[in-house]
Length: 428
Image (cartoon, rainbow, N blue to C red; front, side, top):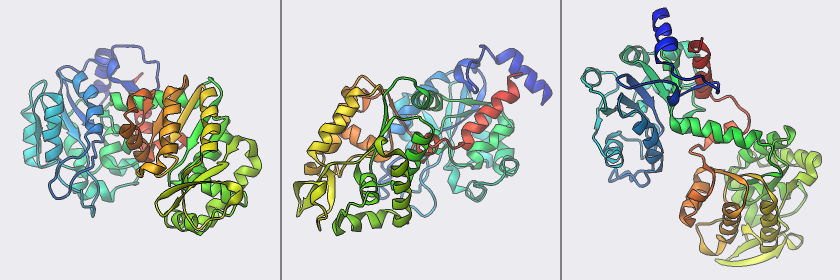
């Protein structure tokens, strides 16, 4: 290993690194055999195996194009055991071939003889996509185990000697401690791919920006995540104000003593595991940061399919809240217009129904038209931006769901930790 480390630090390392992790710009990878971990987990029709959305594959193209003179072996997963869309990577290879404009060879194995022979017979410029890593017991069983055990799996020990570098580009799975995510980092120099590099760079810019006011718009149904983010943002003075919408706003309204009504309570109770606990947490935050957490002044109720606006003072109602009201929309839009840095996670309303998409549409458009540095993330958030045709108007659209939440909450993501450990190990 010592001679290998000298080779890395003295011959292939081409620039002075200013970050605390390696990027593709730091090495000349032409002619090298690289193992590339990506997250191209995609919506799939379980009956036809047709990929319904290839956004994540398109994101990886920048990394693959930069590796066009290398031998690239791709590791990826699709769904997880027990799910209807848990399937092979064959459709992904077909779609990636189309997007990349050249053949991506699918191999229905991971470390068997067929996979090893395919890797050893590669030429520069070839791309091979191995089988779904979650088909194999070690990937699932070893989740969360100590790093040494993950590096010592048969899967990792068999594949690692075949490669010169490990490229980590699966930000959306960066919060998962699994052999394919962290096992190779102990054995190979680990480099951030373009997706990973952009995520870290843009999210760090969001978190550490001195451009104020800084606001977070939190909505959707993932209440526990949003309450945790609210606490982290405000206690660490990362954000100046939190604008609450959706079920998140309902929790804070309940914490204020507002009776939102049985219709809305029924919806929230199905989505929030420990409702009383979340209300209590929200109440604690309101006592400490009352002026920094904004809640709706009015809402839109779903009365047998019709949108009916109602001030908060006139609640409760037996009809469920499906959107923020127009007065709230005006107030929040004014906050967005003043902002210099903004993050949005979770749509303000049930945007899938036209009459209740007003809040989502107008908040998203206000953000897209603002002069602020803007970041959006989360599956439903990105879907709404795509539906509105404005996804490209935000400064950064995160590929992460759980990984994004963890990063925004200041948690250590295993895959990113190993990127930094690899930098310290090889940058000597």
